[in-house]
Image 1 (tube, rainbow, N blue to C red):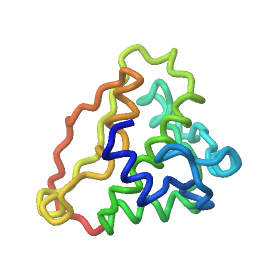
Image 2 (cartoon, helix red, strand yellow):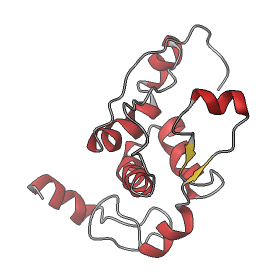
Image 3 (cartoon, rainbow, N blue to C red):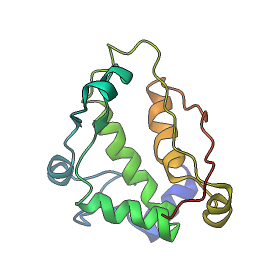
Image 4 (cartoon, one colour):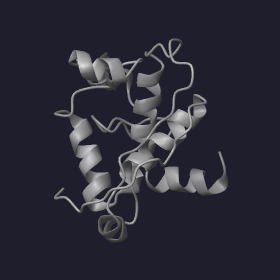
Length: 152
């Protein structure tokens, strides 16, 4: 831990994103809260969609939990301070998914329209998944381009 991180932890002690209990490291969740919120599961798909995604499509938990608050804080209020907790959550979820059936997996985030990107300043999906997926050796490829500026 560097001096800046130590000072930050002294002024703003790390806490569990769900219950606010003190944690040793920034981004950590207490065991109980993580177990309550983290539920990786494969989504059921129709046969056409299923044939397109050999490894399936996964969800790490239900949106109607503290995850909604954390994601909204990042997406609409630009609170990057929630990223360590979300990264910890994503890494914990990825540990429970078997990637052995995937030969060459990549992450392809849905892009923002250039107007929304200019207004927001970042694509939250890139911020959320780039680091945890890179740690698993799965690259992020910016392969799509948004054509229309749709409503959020």
